[in-house]
Image (cartoon, rainbow, N blue to C red; front, side, top):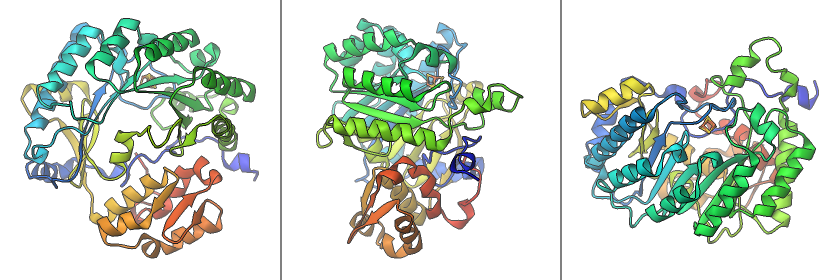
Length: 438
Ligand code: SF4
């Protein structure tokens, strides 16, 4: 079997976003979750807020998020009332413990789908519950085709510090065949407005391996990225979780031609080309997916705090959060989510208490995605030597060439970074190995 046969892009998840796997989160743990929410926090743990805006102009064919493309202005308004209400309920929970927000993240869906009036309503609503004047970072995800200059100006005015543009590709043909709603011209227009308005940090997302991608086009995407010169570049590799349009089409004969989906070695070679090119042009690696212009100055607070065990209220339909040692996810159906909030109830759908050992594994595998970790952090926090506890796993990673071990540290090699998510399950507890991830 050749490498590429063995590594075809099959149905299922590649990306390890959290631990333990989502398939272990259950409604039966909700009573325990409520106890945690109604208890004081560990005071020194930073607190963040994620707000999920689930609207999109079109559903991208590779998308696996909870999104709606059929809601009218009245629906959007009801949703904003609901999420503002939810944030207010969260702000009054004992587990808040007087903490303000260290970071805020508007994700989706497409937060920039909202009009300026709707955005003002949302931001003002949140500010009635939390003062975020002390927040170190307010991230806002955008789809380029939904942006106008006045909307970006309003976002800047309202305090957004990190603007993230879902570019994905610069070829109109590829954008269209993957179901994206925007075109390349809208990327350039939105980016130059954002620059003129002086956002402190602008990130763009790219995806390696979209349907129709070629080496030549990918190189062109990298050149165009260099031309606009974002502060931060995030590169994902296309995967096919079970609930995407592509995954459903794949199950039907010749829809689309499975051969047109690039295999993993090809996607890795494209990411490697991108990393090499950006490194040669002054960028630095900030994680297996991210390059930044100035690592010391350009932090990604949301990612770094979460990967070091911060608390975060995950608000909005189907949102994920983590508070004081417990994973939480909201109800994932529109009617149920809104219905619970109309009754004044926090709309939780399922939860999972995370043991201290699982918290250690979670932070260790997430931090490994940055390409580097030190054992001292874990010794301080969990009173455990990770290189002893997981000796066999570290030894196998080093033997296979994915990491280099130092005295008290592990550094992921370039080959390791390109496939880091594939390497992480070896740290999972036995019951989570070979289990479905989502
Ligand atoms: S814009 Fe983002 S959230 Fe919306 S459908 Fe596309 S990938 Fe999914």
